[in-house]
Image (cartoon, rainbow, N blue to C red; front, side):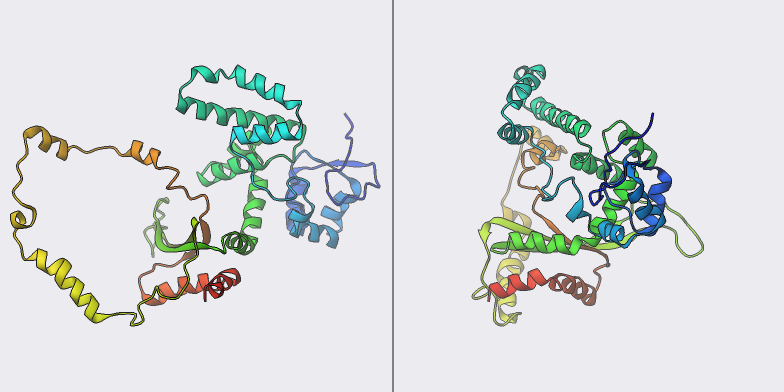
Length: 355
């Protein structure tokens, strides 16, 4: 069956009617020439003119297009994140087209949500949302943000390229080549993403967290010099407090910075005095029955409690400033991590606003 257009390249001039199918070979040559648009996938159709620009001529126009996919990619021009709430998705879609109300009503009734408990309803709504995205992807292949997020998650768990590509053929995920390009683009755009996130919270209090992270969950590969491939990293995070205004700099710092007298006073009153007391003098005599003692010795599971506080423990607004190789064992290493934070132009503007 002969190929038919149109060409999927966003900057195509639409002059030719000779078509080419995108193959693995074309993807590899486009990556080598730095002319491959990030949204191009195996099986797509392009015109001969665009094929020559990507593969044969190494066109400067296509190199520029490959470097700036966000300005030309038809997928999500405003770069809005995908919606992961079925109710929100339904509301937005019905506002766009009222004819969809009957479709969502039927979908809701077929899922039989009325007879399910709260936990099952949450899970079923996620499944319904996936069905909606799957149907949208059949209609328009550029609606693939949710598929991309799923593929990124699978890639992070160690799923093989073959597994991801198999799911891509079923229309559930995007290809492993797309994930590789997505990670490269994310790395190149990270500084802009950080500044954009900080700009949204310029008037809010922000908590800086610098912590060590030891990646030891890797296969051990002993050789003559090392016995493992463990990596010692430092995570630098900023957590905006969305319900708290930014704290001004005045009247929050001790002008002495380190007040020796205050430290000695608190050590003497709060720590040394209680240490001089016997246990029963400090806490009093306490007798309990066997049932209470057994209860205190029981190891409890806190999974339910953590599940209830999942919202308060969410990392939704957390900004990852950097993940760098740093053991955080010395003052110089902490200063290196802090310098990474202060190098942000937007953060410097945030600090100046508080003066």
